[in-house]
Image: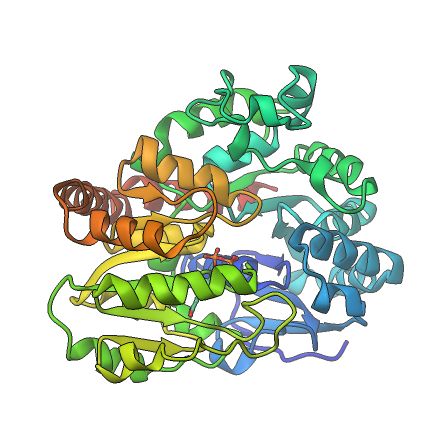
Amino acid sequence: MAGIRADDTPAAARVVMMPLPFQGNLTPMLQLAGALHARGLAVTVLHTTPFNAPDPARHPRLAFVPVAVDVPEAVAGSEDNMTKVFDLNAALDASGCLRDALASLLDEKEARRPACLVTDAAFPAAQKAAMDLGLPWLVLNTCSAAAFRLFMSYHILYGNGYLPKRESNLCLPVKELPPLQVRDLFDPSELPNQENVQKIMNLWNQTKMNSGTIINTFEDLEGPELEMIQGEVTDNGTLAFNIGPLHKLSPIDGTKTSLLEEDCSCIEWLDTQAPCSVLYVSFGSLAQLTQDEFTEIAWGLANSEKPFLWVVRRGLVLGVEKPELPEGFERALLEGRGKVVEWAPQQKVLAHSAMGGFWTHNGWNSTLESIYEGVPMVSRPIFGDQFATGRYVEAVWKIGFLLEGMLERRKIERVIQRLMVEKEGLEARERAKDLKEKAIMCLESNGSSQMVLDNLVHHILSL
Ligand code: UDP
């Protein structure tokens, strides 16, 4: 089989890892690969190419096997991210290419044969390939434990009448999943293609059949949710392993996993700003805004009179390849108060002493990265699990404020003021700092995430 081979040193066991090829899924999978390798396991990464292929040269200790796939135009271009995931899974399942690549690895001589596959919780095509070949498989859940539990509860949400959502029940608490409200639920019935509702139900049912669920979270952040997962979700005897935050547990940092080129000029710009003064604004790699929302954000930032660093990536605005900043907005930038980049070295940005707050879509990686650096947030969830995470940021961890409803420049100015200037914002920052301390403790040599990683390695060796 074609592919780059690395690390031929004898290892306790080999693990194959198959990331779902989107930035927010690829990054934690490669970080997990780095963490498992550091514990003595050999790792082969099976990845799509050319679609969102990682760069093997940045990971000399891992082996890479590319799987050439024709990704349907719809996946690259689709505006609906769930549809993207399902279309990609369908294309990979139909072509049989993942299964063939995995079968070739199983044909290798004893010493190189993989003990198991680790794949994404939202990658049923890869899970099915492993099941067809009789290879044990584990899932890496790239969202929070709370969101994982929520996705595992869809039968209850439909059964108890929360879903499909209705205008009249949006503010109703979901008693089974506090503190979530109906409006925080991702409603599969709203997907453009109704077949996807059944696919979501099937997806989480299949995910339950794994040999272990790895969750990128830590005990002091989501202890109660983890306990409930062990009790309810893994009812077939499989185990849940909380080993986050992965970006700090692993020797592989964000700069090595980025699919886009980072504009590091923003770090020099941050160097010129006062401590805790800058609002960082980014909506991750997939979320999209309407043109009106984009314009309101621009003016909200400009009028806030606070320094800001804004990631305006290509494709951020629906239907526009390269978003144009509104006329007159440049003034805020020329005054040196604002900086706009297409893609930032986010972990370095959040770790910078000038960082005062993060306006985020609450993608799980961004949320964990912010928590680890003790940066409080303005939460503006856009799709999927982000709504549940936004609710936790505001109501459970109390380290930020949800910005809900229509985006409007005055509302934006107001929330920036609350976070960056007012007492409640300063209190949120204090709580964020406390959480940072707890995250650091989980990563110490006797910390919970390190101990759980040891357990995970033993579990893999026992498969
Ligand atoms: N990211 C980055 N530079 C940016 C914006 C995002 O490196 O300008 C990284 C960020 O650090 C995170 C990932 O992209 O690791 C985004 O993942 P997340 O789960 O937050 O959101 P998604 O992109 O999956 O919606």
